[in-house]
Length: 153
Image 1: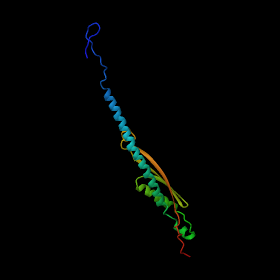
Image 2: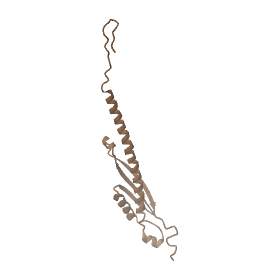
Image 3: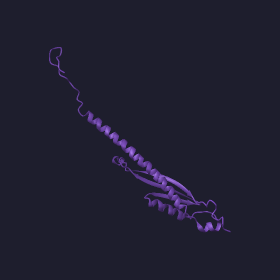
Image 4: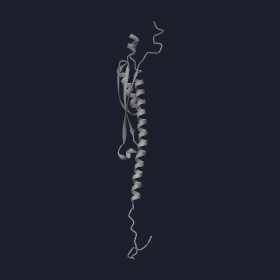
């Protein structure tokens, strides 16, 4: 658009210099979308890691609760665990699935705490390499439903 000013001289248009503003906007939007994608993907992995830790803790506790003190059971019909064997069996299971944990056996129960490290896919690019999920489960050794000694004596 050209024209003349009131004094008759040609008018020159002055446009604001917006060169590069769209590029900055695109970079910020792409970075935001990348961060959101990382939160969704890695957030799902963290939730899956928590479920895995709970499953592993429950299974390790069940494995440990199978180590009954048989001498005591036969002598007194009292269900008690062989503490060291129950703890060792539970920890062996936890290590076999690639995690770390603690186990405590006492009386007829085994309590296992599992620590599971979940590696991040996208957020590792931002320096968050892994997140830790922990879970605790307890299993109890029980006698059979109809009683293990129903037909004896």
